Length: 139
Image (cartoon, rainbow, N blue to C red; front, top):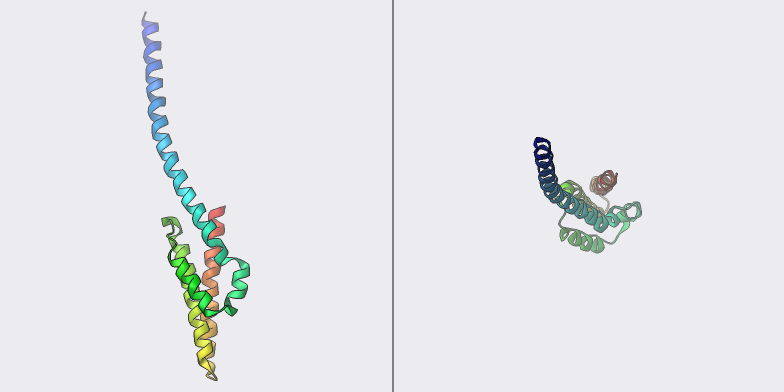
């Protein structure tokens, strides 16, 4: 009789543990899955704006197109884990636009021309940093 009572008690405790652990584990899984899906969605939406092809043509792009892309990127709400990467991307597009504007207005002023070229290069480095962070999250 004692053995039967011990086995029944053990079985009930095991079922209780499994039931509770399953519920808690499922909540954690759903939260983790939602977080990963948000990151994957962000990567899908923004990876084209920092691709190597874009980095190659960005210095020669129309300033209006850069401004439109910048405003489009402002509408994307990144997950908290990707905030730094998104800030790098926005900063990169801002610097490329400002550098292009400075180059166009420099005329024969060598200092302004050099500063504009530096701003374009700095913007491209920020876009490249965004790409590096995206690749790091993919792994």
